[in-house]
Amino acid sequence: MRKTRAGCLVVLLLALAACCTAPVLLVAAASRSAGQGQVDAAAAGIPARMLTAYLTGASQVTIYVPGCRGMRWQILAGIARVESDHGAGRQITPNGDITPPITGPRLDGSGAGGNTTAIPDTDGGTWDGDAAYERAVGPFQFLPETFRAYGKDGNGDGTISPHNADDAATAAAVYLCGNGRDLTDREQLRAAIHTYNQSWAYVDDVISGIDRYDALENTPNAPTGNAGVVIQAALAQQGLPYSWGGGGPDGPSTGICCSPGGQDGRAVTGFDCSGLTQYAYAKAGINLPRTAAEQAGAGQRIPASAGISALQPGDLIFYGYSPTADSTIHHVGIYLGDGQMINAPRPGKPVRIDPINAMPDYAGGTRLL
Image (cartoon, rainbow, N blue to C red; front, side):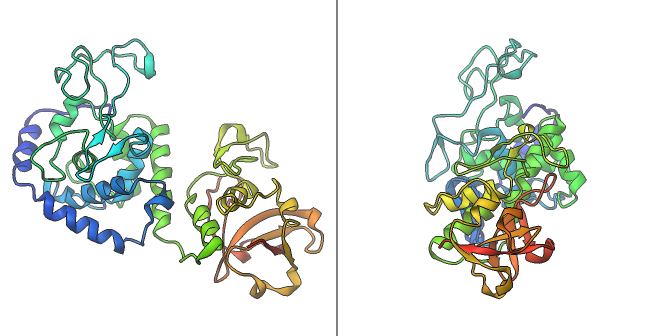
């Protein structure tokens, strides 16, 4: 967090913290997680204990900001993904404590870590281990002074720490809600994120993560076995941008220059259509060739003449200028069932679920599972 607020609001928030009912709400949030679209923390790329913290923070926010609307775990996950990659590389205890602590670069104005303004220490090094200058702390990267104003006892253990996942998530929810924002309104959501870090590029990055996590709650049920592994891997990439030539077995990446429409994939981290299928099938131990046309010959070919009813979930599906000539294939997706596919459609559009008939030149499929 880059912006600090103080004054009478601090006194009010500290007073409210004394009547927190976090233990009850923590249980309620955890029990509700099963009803929120059956989100798989692993599929979302979030440690399970961090997902619980996001649920907890979202559930408690109206205690402190009664007028807040629309706070949900996906918003908190979107922030923490950018700030700390969900506490990557740390251990999280059952009560939410994170070790070793997450601290940012020393804000001494030296330019290291991108900081050019010196911010003298305000906490005696208690949270950031630096008694001379401030460092952002915890999975949500609060400045110590800001956390003192917004920190909450999210897990009800009597201690408020930016290095506790529940405390930090609840504080972030309160901060983003401001005086009572309606976060179901896209513009108010963007404005809230902008207060967290006054960069519109940052806002766009956080929003892309939120959209991806939102999409995970609105996906069809995947089958069991390797087909389920492939589908879940692809579904977990929803919201990532299309990158011409981008992505592969190891995940999203920058691509190459340039698409017929002019997208320079070197400037975009994400997937193109065949990069996405390569990644998803790699999760099931299958190595696909790089291009859509090459992938058509990798398994049991299902001709377009057999119709869509011949497809099974997990099959690759193709589009080509001539349905009987694999050399003309220009697009590939993964069949989900019920006439739907998951694919990276084109530059400017993220990985998403589309109907098979979203494109006119269906060229059949391939079965590898």
